[in-house]
Length: 452
Image 1 (spheres, one colour):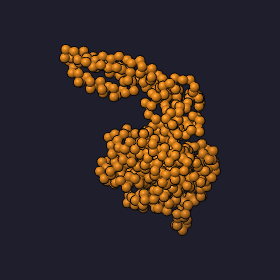
Image 2 (cartoon, helix red, strand yellow):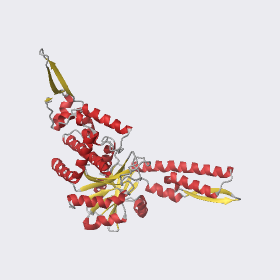
Image 3 (cartoon, helix red, strand yellow):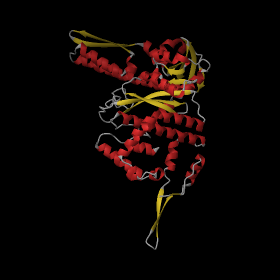
Image 4 (cartoon, one colour):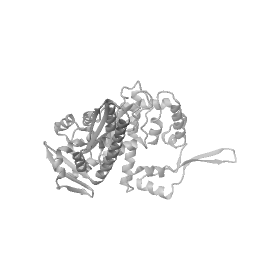
């Protein structure tokens, strides 16, 4: 896995100081490991052109490799593919990417709106095993990727009796109609504004407790089932956010009123300042009913607070809504399935931190796609180790296992002879007691020495 990440995700297509630094890092990293012995590729052979050729040869086999890995891991870990989770993230570029039509400015999850990006749609199982992904232009809205990814997954693995689960970013009238075609089952989050249609249900007390601090209830509507969810922790978080933005909004309005009193301001200028204040404090701006007027050539501002907005905020804080066409599940089961989306979110976190999918330094479209594919394969290896660790009763966090086993070293033992000939043996350091236990639980053995 580390070879894939270190050797394939760093090269770039245009010379730059950063690219030379990455080449130096890659060569140093390769020499400092036993990868040359394991792979039979000497360190002198690890250079940019070789790695580029590897990328070029790998990408055409994307579909075949995804299918092979799905079948292999399914048999190895007895996986179920009845619930598929879908989410979208973005990753950004260093450079202008003039030769890559997918590189566009769009909503950046990495808070790098100054950089071009691509969007990545990932499909995983309920235990987080990745099944496949697609790369989209950086300015494509999440909902526009939904139908394409479903069609491609069904063409590759068949439609079967699967349930598609996704968050509210995928919700649209077209997507709902598409999901209902051919009897597709789905669980999808809805927009926050949809809660307005369920005010009476929010006021009622017939909630089912899933666990402490979480309640749900079923609401049949328009041929589908809606699942109302109410979280105590989420309510406290949203309440604190509302209060913070309300205080900020009121302070900005006071500043604007002071400006109007001290100097002669045009109404148009004050309108723009109020608009910017609302934009910056959108979570609290709805409380204020603001009137900007003009008197004796001077702008005036006056506002009142809408208690109806505060009442609704208090009622809806911590609540969210799911939509599904599954009629034979309990609300608790539907919520539990939806919450598995955290597996897709966890995949993106690992891709961006441990596997370093960002930033992308490649400038050509094919190399960008290959870069992302290698990161996908690396994540498959990560989840494979995670399943091995879990099956061995060691939790489900492979990071600690990699850290511990990474301390095992390969050393060269040099034995001089009286004839002046040196005998060299390449050996592996003896694992510590806790490392031996890890290897035993994982069913792994390591050789005592390597043939050089």
